[in-house]
Image (spheres, rainbow, N blue to C red):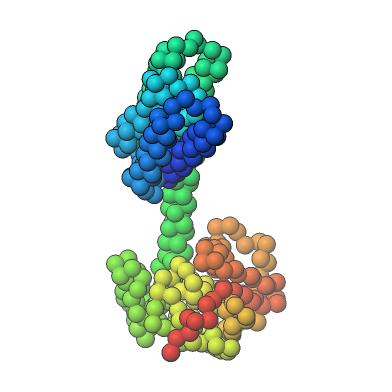
Length: 388
């Protein structure tokens, strides 16, 4: 698979080859107008050859896909050698090839990497020395500088490409690590919201055999749906913990989650939706969009039911400009937010972290004895309104 660096080098090579052709056309024209070219027919033919090959190379290397195409490099080196040697063979001393030869270094790098550059440097050096012999000139400081330009230019191009490839590899490793970390965070959040909370309920209701069996059956079904159904199972009347699915809208989905929290914890959950919020379509993927917002709201309801010591919880949802906002409020005991440990998955992962990963934000306002309000906000597209 061609890397992004290789693809970029391919495009740069084609552009450099085109620039070299334009460069040669300009020089040949200027030398011709000023009478510095002895064989105008040869100069014209060589210039046309360079331009035609530049166009062919551009077409054959469309989208920069030139890596590994050895035939392209071989043809480029042959054309470059002809551009330099043919005028010298007929005694033409006007150097109108300009930057056309140097472009072969970039083509060599794009096609064959370091080996391609070495091949291009070797061919260009030999061609330059042969052209001198054909016109009967001695090696001059200018020629030595040109040879050094080929050598050091090739080294610089190779080192630069290696550096960019190393950057690309590090970026890919970082992206892979981030993807793994996000997947682990999403998995940990889901398990906390479902399995761990159910186990806590089973522990508290250990003496209620029928309730424990019902909770166990429900949790088994929910976990199977999540593992093998890609989290897309439509919730039943028991309000599946992962019930943020396509085809449902925000108002009814929040109400179903509220009913499930009522059933599990024995507290009243009052859900009110205004301003068009009720009809917003909920994402099938619980890790993004309103799917994530709904589960964050459910976690806030669950936390209030378990820790606030109240008989009722209020949930209010509305659309404010380009955002949907959901508020989960209780008038309970409250808590010291600064004292919440980093290992408390319910708040850090299931609410704050979940909203951050979904591109939204969450704010918790509480204090000991003052109740708690969890504010969830997420940008929404107004065209997402459903029919439910």
